[in-house]
Image (cartoon, rainbow, N blue to C red; front, side, top):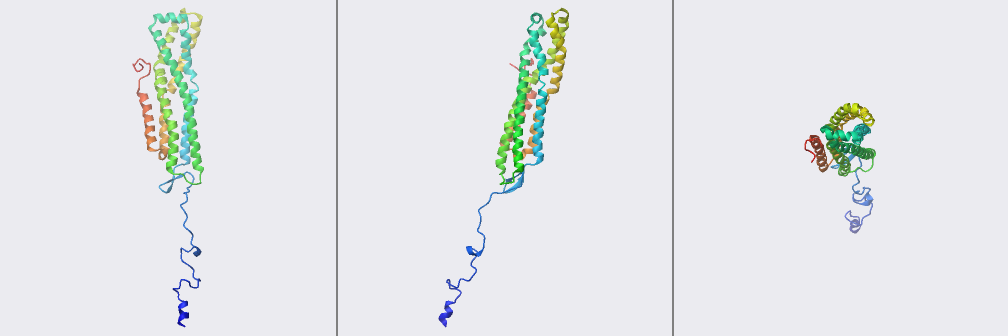
Length: 296
């Protein structure tokens, strides 16, 4: 009887096997521990410090679209560059006339016109280059909008904020830095000399034409008939244009920085602020070729 009781002891590891088993026992029904899964977040979110953070909204995308439209509007205005180039081309036609050459020999004012024609011609070429650069900047903002659109629709594995920040910062730098350089160049080498000299040159030509119409030949008279209207139109166009490039840059950069600031890394922020300084410095420079001593 004692031997039989000993075989049925609960301490016997080889007991009946009818127990439920421990929690770690695969047969117990407990789920095995799974490796960490990538985080998923709502569209427009990124992962920051282990949490989903909203970084892209419809408002932010709309801001990018508005800045692209601002640039496109200035391109449309610059489609009319021929209005300001026309009086300069007229100067070229005057300078080919023998009568003009004779008048220049005895007129200090006309000699001055001869000296600035090349500067004015280069200014118009600079405006045309600026127009092309605006088209490139608009295209880059379009690419940025496309990327933000994708982030707004992506509901899969969330990207880390560092990854999105690097991408957006790169796109902004490739847009803003070249734009700043072109705006500064346009202010110094196009708008400043044109503003300083075009109207004055027009006044000299119109005054000379008052005399030439009485004594000059048919070719001179024909050019003089065009002079007043062309210089007036060119000056009016320039007055409308002259403040717009710098204002455009300031508005585009400030709005993008305001809406996308969380996605601009510190190094890029420093470079983009320096670009704004470059534009501001160009605004303070004297006009190239204006006689101020700035162009040597």
